[in-house]
Amino acid sequence: MGDFLAKPLVGIDAQGDPKRNSNIRRRLQSVEKPSMPIDDKRLASWNALMLQALVEAAEIDDLYREKAIQQYRYMSDAFIVDGQLVRFAGNGGLAEITFEDYAFVGSAFLQYGKRLQDKEAIEWAREFASQAYRYYLVDSVWQMNRRALIPSEPGLWVVQDKAITSPMTQWIETVLGLPEIDPMIRREAKEMLQRVTREMLDTPSYYGSLIALRNRIDP
Image 1 (cartoon, rainbow, N blue to C red):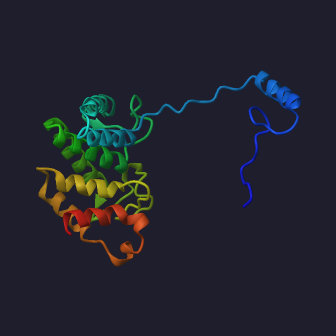
Image 2: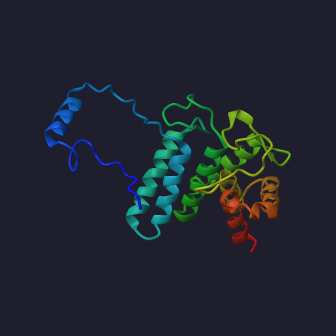
């Protein structure tokens, strides 16, 4: 087997002449490095993933229950402005909200509300699920309205997912899990769940979360 990892040229365990390596290291350290920009954006959907994780962990350790409460309060303050969800905390005008944000925040708030008995969180989940329906779904097809980043192509009702649950699956699960929502929206979500086709079953890396949801709800 070949060694595909490059050996260090400078520093501890470096190969070659130690004195030469020391000189190289000293010269590199003396060069004034430009300051790198800091990526400090705070995204609604990413924070929602954190809230989901904390809510699940709270079932095991009360420490995470307090962390979940803190995270929910932070999200309520940072990502809801004048009753509307924003994509970036502290800079709602930086980019328009997307279906991904509605889906993940709505799902996280519903999980939080149910497990911690928070009626306000459940109401926000209902509002976000309803807004996503109004903004992005037209004639049972997800649209590229409002500069949506998901789905990636217009006319696709299935949103591809790989590493994590797709936004569409999150939205469907939220709608079906809400105690009260517009019957038309609930009916649409149920119909989507029945559209699992053989083609989707042959591509589980893209549609695994939707298939898993259908198996849980309609085994």
